Every structure is written in C-alpha cells, then in structure tokens.
Length: 98
Image (cartoon, rainbow, N blue to C red; front, top):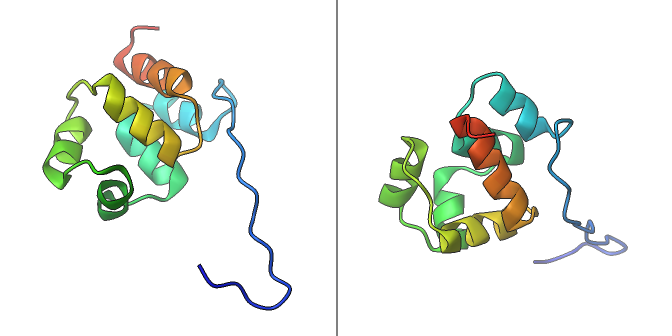
C-alpha cells in the first residue's frame, strides 16, 4: 500500500461483539449472519474470496444458510477483526440458538 507524505495507517483493533455491535443489531432485525457482516464491514463477495481463500460458490452456500467450518470461521473472523468465538456467537444468534 502506498501512503502519501505524512499519512499514517489507521490502526485496526479487534472489536468485541455484543448487543451494541452494528452486526448484532442487523441480526436482531432479521438479517442472516453473513449478510449482516458483509454489509456492516463493507466486504463484497470478491473481496471475501480473495482475502480468505474461500470460493465464491462456498460463500454463496454460506449466504444461503450452510454451516461454516471452524477454519472458515477463523478466516472470516480475521478478515472482519473479530474473534472466532464472537463470530460463532453471531452465527448462533442468527440461527436462533442463543
């Protein structure tokens, strides 16, 4: 990445997932977990595929409600700067298991 003179990178930190998180609010309104994360974190399918190594076909399956594997959860959590446990919590919340 190229920075202009004096420009500094924005520090990224892992943000805790709780009921005040924007994704939790989307899920509470009825969105599916993957769509809620994609919309709130502004990550389209091609970006997810490129940055996680998941295929577009697999992302489509997840978008339709397929259960993600632990390795997929870990890859997506790293992409969205959240812990795998918190991402799993949001998936469970969206599935009504919470």
